[in-house]
Length: 209
Image 1 (spheres, one colour):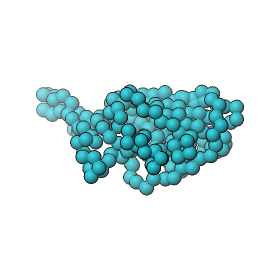
Image 2 (tube, rainbow, N blue to C red):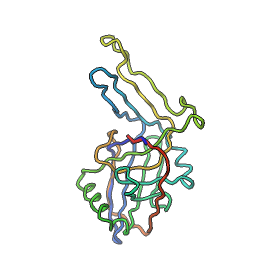
Image 3 (cartoon, rainbow, N blue to C red):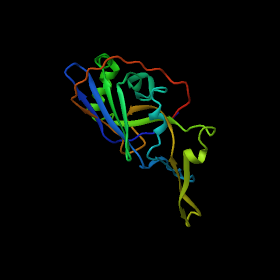
């Protein structure tokens, strides 16, 4: 599974009935440095194109998307399966709003996570995804790989750039250290009435950033 991550705007709100609301965003067209290339290698950078998650967002009824802690399906927070996770796609970013029901908030590790968010220590957002198989989407239509600028002094290109045009999104995770610089979660007061949580685990190999 691939992980992509970023520090943007992670927002946390509390309600009078004990529920909490998390909101955040994952930006498009923002470069993440996956590798600096070391002493002899070539740096690798990656970004997501607007609309990269369109297929997944249009098929959440068949393939739910989950909000997790640290990419662990043993630590679910919300899901499109029970309408506690809402995703909104824009030209510049993927937005999410998650309702953490009182039942979820009462779990010890969730309380610990909320404290870390409030302290500004775990406010990164990281999607778990995979590139569609070539039988469904030809590689060139799912990923665009380019070279960044030829460096005459080194006799080589400076970096390998990858733009992800299409990806299958399985989950978003709250993380401490993301790869991207503008994906964050926010926290504010909010009134919710939803309850319950059911998160099936997809059987697939995912990637993260």
